[in-house]
Amino acid sequence: MPFRIAALLAAAVLLSAQTSTEGKQKVRQIKELARKGAEAIPQLDPFLADPEWEVRGEAVRSLVEIGTRGSIDPLVKATRDDDAEIQIRATEGLVNFYVPGYVKSGISGSIRRMGNTIQTKWIDSTDTTAIESYVEVRPEVIEALGRLVRGGASLIGRATAARAVGVLRGKAAVPDLLDALRSKDDRLMIESLIALQKIGDGSAGPRVAFLVRDLEERVQVTALETVGLLRATEVAPEVREALERARTPKVRQAALSALSMLPDPANRQIFLPNLSDREDGVRAAAAEGLGRIGNPEDKPAIQAIYDNERSARSKTAQAFALVALGSIDYESFSPLRYLVQTLNSRSWRGVAQAFLIEAARDERVRRKLLENWNGHTKDERIGMGWVLAYSGSKESLQYLEAMSQDQETAISQEGIRALRTLRGRVR
Image 1 (cartoon, rainbow, N blue to C red):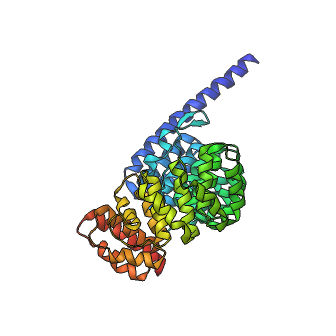
Image 2 (image 1 turned 90 degrees about the horizontal axis):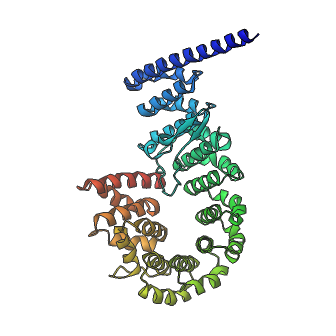
Image 3 (image 1 turned 180 degrees about the vertical axis):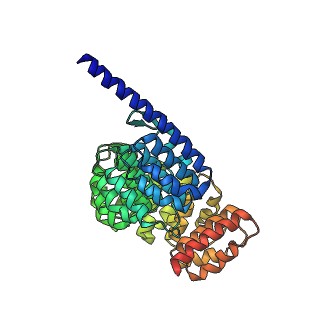
């Protein structure tokens, strides 16, 4: 009997070695095929069904590297693989087709494997990377990613898929993201919340309400941000409760910021005392909230603070509030001019641009910007181009058409993208 067991073990070891050798040969074959580019895709496809994960993984890597439209179908197929690493590589490969270079900033490059267990260097999502509205993503891509969000082979793979859905603005996967909020995994919950922010489907806002009371600070803060960005006015009572019970300054500021995006006159008495708070983020949120409520009686108080404000964060928000309350002249040091000039700041241009986009939905503000269209710096022109892209009307097309033909390459390229976005909105 011992001899029989030994023989069986020896046979198993030999079979394993043979399989490993065969697998290495297939990996070399895949690398050779990949050098042919897109024409090799039909020959790479069968390797996705190979019994060895190393072979399937190399096939996925090659498909991602080729990166043509023909890679999409086999990568969608690879998302159904049972292996967590292959799911992650296929996920980031699909996004890479629509956002070139995405793989380089993703987590697939840091994957380390110990048997069936994978380890990665996870980087929290803090950027606003997302496709423009004119980019059309194939429905089967979003369906595949949504399926991974709901039931991928690993929690880190599910979080990777949630991030991917956000970048691709996959509205069809919103139910999958909402389901993931019940996962109890902080990373997956946070990535799902950020994805919902990028997609911007307001109907999802009330479904996030239960998380504004979460005991984990990062989850609670992200949930509050999401409720605000989705303009979930129904959740205002829960946000006010979170503000009253805030355990940390960060939660307090997040709750106040969320309230500032839900313009309810009932919040006015909350904002007024916080206009002069020592924390610049709190002062900023209070000013934003008062600006959106739109009570002209608050304008003198905001103006007085604006005139003496030293924090760029607070001053930018106060400028927005004053513009929202009717200060739309374009003289030097005026609030509207200050917002435009802040487009030159690397640190605050994104904030200023968001405020201008919101303010420019008012035709009077938009007209004032168009009256002063010429004579700006490169960064100001690019930023104002995107303001028109998201808040302009048909009358704005001529300005972006001229921008798309600018002699300075950086301006013309952004002008082309902004023009495509505006045309998609007003067609």
